[in-house]
Image (cartoon, rainbow, N blue to C red; front, side, top):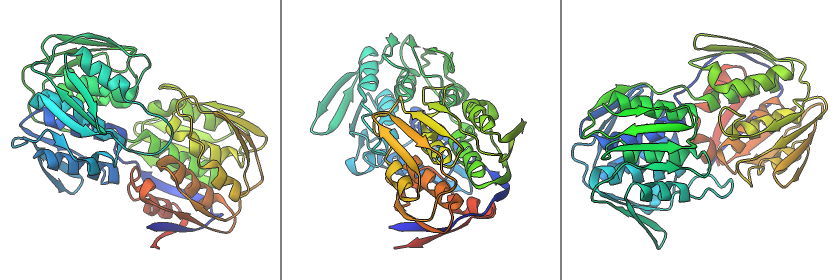
Length: 417
């Protein structure tokens, strides 16, 4: 196990390069199984979740190779349709393999997916969508089995705009017979990126980014090279860090349009923000209370930035109400923030935050990916010495996190316990 040792209280200043989006890269890796030709993902981050997905590809028989920031996947010899429990349980996105593997081999078997413990995340929408495409789905002993002679297009109405279900159905339907329409589809930028990647491979998908995605099945997909979109959650994390610590930073390879809801809230608390091309500049302000933050599907405020914003609200003037509409147990970072001097009360899906002048150093523990990032931001803004223990969560989603923070002026180092 590892931990950060952080001496807080210094402003941030400088530039940071934003990685490719974790939540875009993972479904792209799943999509690489749909072709027997080579796929190259440029600027692929070597974060734990990506490396776990690469391990899954290896178990299927795919050959993978990193060359600097480029990842090459060769699925020509892929033949295995089973994904081991040990790998599947490491990350939630392993479930994406169902759609692509059953499309490629006519069957798939995978253990129930893992990931952060932030509340119930049932995969019923995934499985029901596959059933609508003619896939036989069975659940037995902690495993999901899929089998299908021929996947056929269908109209599928999702009960809620699930990102994962939308992507899984897109993967399964890309080479289906006929046309598939997903209604009430998720609209996240990562959905658009998956559409663009599959189309680069010869697919025919349209409508991504709207509530209706149309997939016209094709007989064959070919290889492709692709650069994923930048990580809007990492960009948001660094913007919040600057707002908390003071100073001014510029982010490169960042898309302001994809985090408009966050930028609106940061401007509300008096941060100065400008964006041009792929750069976002922020200068911290007075830190007025953002009053109300409610998470919701894109283009609303992202649930993955709720924890960092809770940390920021804890040192803003006045009171803030934070409502978590997507996950019922996504306030596990709050008790740790309270150990640092935050004044927060949680009732159900709402957190009531009364701003304090500053946080103080403490020993805290990460229990999920975004909560761990929030605690790190709290520590670099706090007065005194802090430790953040169990970096396995943070490593799942952030590449070189401490190095980037240190380059901006934070006093942070990683040590093995």
